[in-house]
Image (cartoon, rainbow, N blue to C red; front, side, top):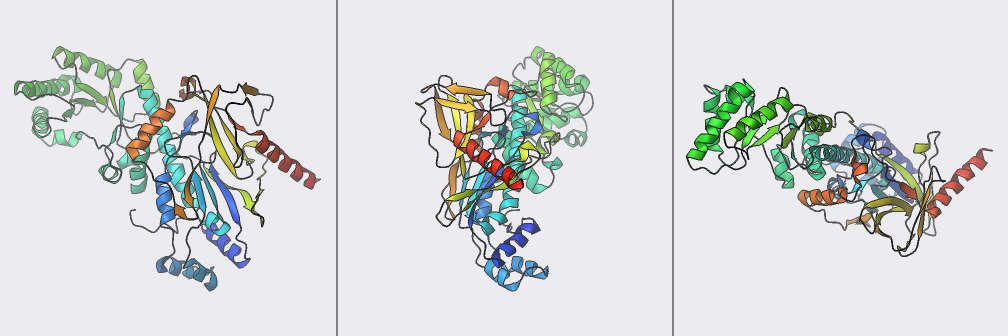
Length: 485
């Protein structure tokens, strides 16, 4: 994990292609786009995350003697190529959408402009990092939306697919809207709140449930959440918790950050019964938290049943994005720089329409409705294009081109999403803190219409192509069609 050289965190073919470029003296500057094709979890959007780790990876990209020795042992890399790798350093440009931004399919989340060998090498790691954290941040945003303002705590470390997935998954979960994590290492690394209660083993290790609760309350009077379902939730767990809370109050201890946690059984029924018992005993402000294999769908169901739960601990289904375990991001060549400095656009064809790429050196503009501040559409354009929001703009669906809309001049605003991260190999971007990214994400989600945030069959946000980019794409498609004939 920390301190490990990740230069070989790549697929073998990236290195074999690099050697091929080296041997053929082919190392022109190229443009690669990292994007995804379909929103995960049936969602209406995704959340970009992982950029800070991409920055760390690029900054530390180098081949030490250890890496070179291993590559040499494979018997497929020649000495002159390995000698070249000794002084390898990323020298190109990287543009990216800032973390916490709401994003949509086909938009370049990361754009790499670099010599071919450099751009090729970084593909795998960029996709690995961005795919994972964007997936968990998106899943978290769904869970947070389902909770309708209640706090969501991430505690999936023990179920994550390894230490890195647990730590960086917790980071992404915080970006997506969690109020805290049980992961202490993530708390240390990213300066995010760590939270937790106790396990059933704590209760079982004492003579009885009451003594276990009382001992815990004596230790943590300002963070006393008691797990009440070890034996009999309503018969002993809640009554013993009430007894301990009553004794604390009688001692003059100010009760704050206190309550109970349910981890099994019928959460709707038990929480409503527990709420009545707590209220009757004068503990109306006691929090009832719940866990037990929760996800956005179960939370929604419990909300419909009016469960008396206001704090949710979500573990396995969040940290693994269990129902949608892969983000599906890809990395595609979009242009090659010519001798005169211009970029020759490239396009990948496919029998699957969604796999046909958008050519050229591109950028993305987000269009907002001026009156409401809500997101109207995204526009992928060529990097040298400019637009005047005071002029009317015609938007059209790039697949179903008869679907059109005209935005009157002055009725909308625009923001370019891609920002420079590396220029000529030097980092020019400072990552905000995770909690700052979390707040930015919350604000960015507020620009979505409610219909776009539905968990099922959300309204589609349109990602359009500028007329210039659309015409370029059609020109290339027609060219290849003519070549085939």
